Length: 318
Ligand SMILES: Nc1ncnc2c1ncn2[C@@H]1O[C@H](COP(=O)(O)OP(=O)(O)OP(=O)(O)O)[C@@H](O)[C@H]1O
Ligand SMILES: [Mg+2]
Image (cartoon, rainbow, N blue to C red):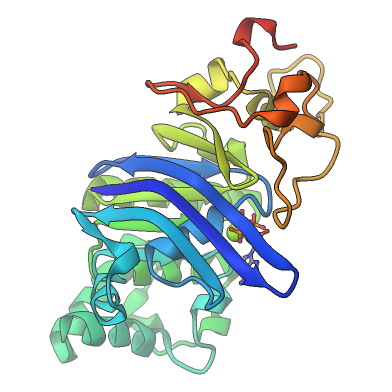
């Protein structure tokens, strides 16, 4: 359904170009859940924004983003506005930034329906209630006239998810949907997304910096570093047989209640400067397995089901 092909995004700045996303390719099939994982600044959000034509003005893109065989990257704004919400919707990290504090929940949800489906009155109300029900807002009927601040953080994120569901989109981009919430609410929201995906059959692209959130949720995981794909495989394989030093580092930083030695390890060093991306592997200078060639040669991404971009053989990794 969605095919991102050799996507590169760079931003023009007074200091030069910031190379935020570099030659990223992936597909999402109908009903599939894909996770995009990476540290802060690795380019995750820009990928999502580019899909919806929401990149900042100083952005330049290359490559193609095919959604049902149409390239979203060269679609005129008027057409892309039709795709937004109706076909593809996005859930942001901070619910307050998606909700207008001065409008009742009902009005905000109605606005989406009116704009995209021309629905008003009774028909709109029924759809709004259905969406609020789907995200388990208790007593939704009597909460329609409430303002966002009258809900808890978890409830607000449910409302944002309801908004994303209103037009029954084929693809939901969830950009760190649970980062602003506490752990128990996080689990509820992830379960909710899972239920919704099953019921509506939507595809989900889940963006997160937290590998723990991905386990058991997405079939496939793509690991991003410095705007490049480092590894991409079935989530199970990413956890059981990570083959890239960066993925291994990320996994060592995830708490595991079964681990004997409960100490978490961080990856020393800083992410690459995207203004002057390194010539070789972007992870080389933080990688304990790197060798000279890693600094001068960009590792290609293998083909196949379990893909990795690393010059070192898996057997030789520490
Ligand atoms: N308008 C812009 N001009 C210049 N650089 C930008 C602009 N927008 C984003 N960037 C840069 O693009 C890079 C990727 O940003 P992005 O928002 O995709 O990161 P992210 O992986 O979503 O991080 P986080 O986990 O913090 O949300 C960052 O280095 C960021 O500073
Ligand atoms: Mg982000």
